[in-house]
Amino acid sequence: MTDPENLESIQQVPFVDYLVLGEHPYLCANECNQCKARFFDRRNACASCFSDEFTKVRIVTTGEVTSFTIVEMGPVPYVSAIVDCEGTPVRCTLIGVDPTPEEVQLGMKVELATYPMGVDSEGTEAIAFGFTPSKK
Amino acid sequence: MGSEDVWIIGSNMTKFGKHPEKDVVDLASEASVSALRDADMTMSDVGVLGVGNLMNAGAGIGQQLQKQIGQTGIPVFNVSNACATGATALRVAIMAVKAGETDVGMAVGVEKLAGAGLLGQRGPKPKSETWEPSGRFGAIGSTEGRIGTNIMPGVFAQVGMEYGHKYGGASFELFAKISEKNHAHSTLNPLAAYQKRFTLDEIMNDVMIAYPNTRPMCSGNCDGAAAMIVVNDSKLQSLPVSVRKRAVKISASVLTSDPWVEGCQVLPDVNTLTRNAATQAYEQAGIGPEDLDLVELHDCFATAELVHYDNLMLCEQGGAVDFFKSGAPWRDGAKPVNVSGGLQSKGHPIAATGIANIHEIVVHLRGEAGDRQIEGAKVGLAHVIGLGSACGIHILEKAA
Ligand SMILES: [Zn+2]
Image (cartoon, rainbow over all chains, first blue to last red):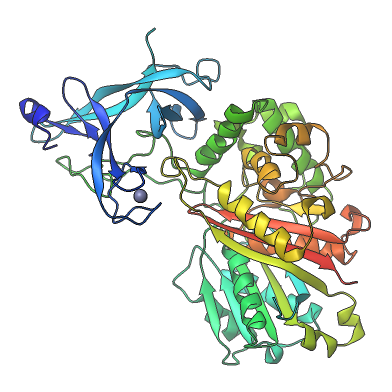
């Protein structure tokens, strides 16, 4: 949120702190300086090599669906997917696609997309992300 | 190893299902007293008590149980380890006996879940006036549905689909057929919560929970308890022949957690810790998967059963689909899996599950499984996994 790219859109807040907003939004991971393991959440130390030094890295915004499920327990079905973004697996909801096994396929190419999810009492707009089928 | 073998001499599980008239301690008492009777022992013989319960993890169910069946002052270990809670309680009793702290240990797993809804389902967070980032992701709301899913049916659906992506052949129909097998098996198990046989069409056309898992492909929440009495070699030798001849040897007892692998932060890796546990267990027991006469594995969802054929090395790596298609895991196949009906029909009272699956192996090795007896069963393996993650594997052998 302190990203300089974001100063102009001060009225927006990302749904999670690893979503970096701006003209070209992207996901950002904490990469272990020693073993290069990547984590989206705050970590006290690296689960892989125990080092405690991390650097923020930008995750590629395109990837391939390596697993998915269509959750139909709530009022609106949605697609949960694991997307391999050039070696970094990302968990997301697929958007812009019908939540049916006919429309969602293992191996399909997808790309990061953002959307507004509402405004709070101070007028700040929250922006969430999903992945959507890639436009060829 | 040098230390003595440990034996199961008493084993019991309650019927799984709805027990509205019994509380958690009633169920635990029923299984415990029956296991003691099975071992021809009383609480005065028991030197350590391991008790697993997840839903009341802070309530000291072990001590509450003692107040109903015997307060003898022995150490009680109340444990909670997700779906591996029961196996963990047993592991504690086995470790105490192996360590020489006592000759006799008791383990109990108990849960009341009927009507609890699907596991891992959480309601929406109350909406605040302004967006407030919280937690380790700095999220301003519930991530459920917004960033994929964390609910169990969805997570395990993805576990199965991931296997399908990697090796191919894992269709909705294939997963449904795994469920068809377990429900067919359950018709022979009077202790199962559900004993209804389903056709493949019925399974595939039932309510979809999280594709490709429909309702009958998910384990059922229910009530139940299971308990076990374990002893060391020297104690066993001092017991009557009627007890000795029904004793079952614990050839391996292993508990693992999930080591870090790439991607485990976005989809729990239920594979590596199971494979690690299986490797350790086969080594401890000095036997291989080819020696197993039956397997009870953690089919919390039909999609999970597929990957564990591979993780437990019942097939070649990547060969789980072919293994299933060969008919091997049916009760009349080469490697019967979940002849109890599995969690999908037997039910899944979480903390009881990890002892109940071992109980199933025990009754077959004793030749006391009635209509569902696997003839001549000498060696069996029981597996549980709890997300988080914890994996318990026990290999049992019939007394020579
Ligand atoms: Zn590291």
